[in-house]
Image (tube, rainbow, N blue to C red; front, side):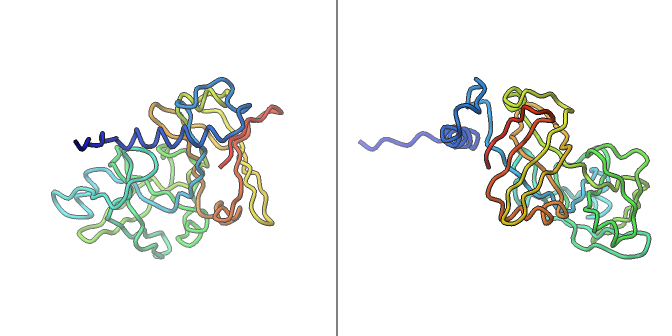
Length: 238
């Protein structure tokens, strides 16, 4: 008699993969934290993108419009939408086809790299995502309408997402700062002061912007390490 395979959820598969990867890491790095509560280190480039409110989605894309998923992002529940907008700065220069990320938020926000801001003529501050008070604005143009943001344009501060097991492994807390060492051919670099952003059901993931990713040659990196802001540094291989 044929036995039907037991279906596995995406979380089950990811947990198994994490456990296998961590079994190949140096046991001395475990710090006594069970492998099932920790994640392998992932470093991703966060390209320019836009977060929108439900109201602004309808203005830009038409009454009743909702964000449609193009692809899921690394963190569960987050995705790149099929929709894009044009971002227009005070010099009337424009960045076309800037991707919208979902789900919708309570405030619309535009995250750019430094070179993007120079092109648009916007003097943007470095902020944690969501901290938009007193930041410059811009104009968003969609296929069905236009939204003028009074504030919300930032360069996102480099940061690392962590779950409870990751915090325990590295011996740090939410809001602490860490350094990221990237080994690339002819370009070994340390990026300092990544802000720790912790939460339940969060995977270990570093976000840097396109300028930073290009500067450290991330695409060809052979090893990455997270370092505590002290002489006793913890690390995790890519």
